[in-house]
Image 1 (cartoon, rainbow, N blue to C red):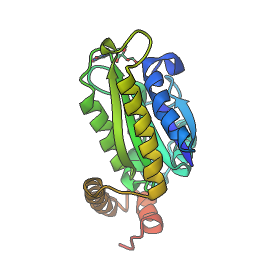
Image 2: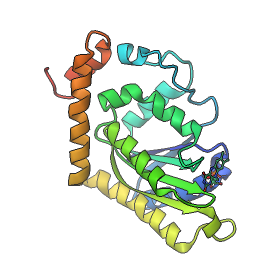
Image 3: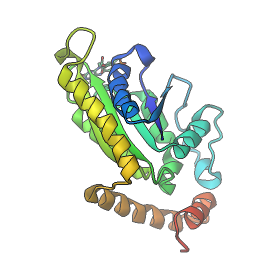
Image 4: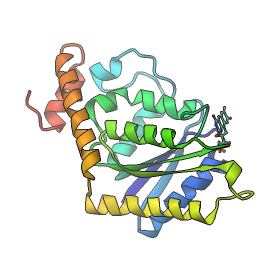
Length: 225
Ligand SMILES: Cc1cc2nc3c(=O)[nH]c(=O)nc-3n(C[C@H](O)[C@H](O)[C@H](O)COP(=O)(O)O)c2cc1C
């Protein structure tokens, strides 16, 4: 079982977010998962140019790591998104990745995967960001199993409280259990199915402009519309 993490902090593995993510991954590894962390630096995944080529051809024209990252995620079982709270939202690095997933979202191309979200901040207010990240996961087809966050002002010097560490490890273990049991909570299933109907209509409506996406739906999403 493979779990990929995408870390959107310029502090990389030395940062607070990586510290919290490490506990989530330790929980997943304790249940047998193999994990990999991909750090988004400024040029790993560049911002979307809004050219729509991905909708037409299924690939981005920009020469960076996005396409390879997309393949790695599609081939894995789980995806953990991790970001510092930057002005009440995800970092620009993670947002660039999310925006570049516009075609992935139209095709719900990560369908079948499971996920979770991790946030750290200086002073808190992280829950809406975790919710936003998990909502994004649903729009890619991924089933989120939960999230964890920590305000560093409330943490002991250089670490996390035992309670936060345990919450993070439990999240990692839950991710592995969900992948193993193919469990889909009914509320998330409903949200994901509603979004699926919306994307089906969108790609059908735009089938002349976005032939790749229309074809993808026919070939991979069991739809002959
Ligand atoms: C550009 C920037 C914006 C930030 N915005 C907020 C914020 O709105 N609220 C907050 O509590 N902390 C904010 N912080 C603090 C970071 O979220 C916090 O230090 C976080 O743990 C950093 O994680 P990292 O070490 O993984 O990069 C901000 C930090 C930076 C650099």
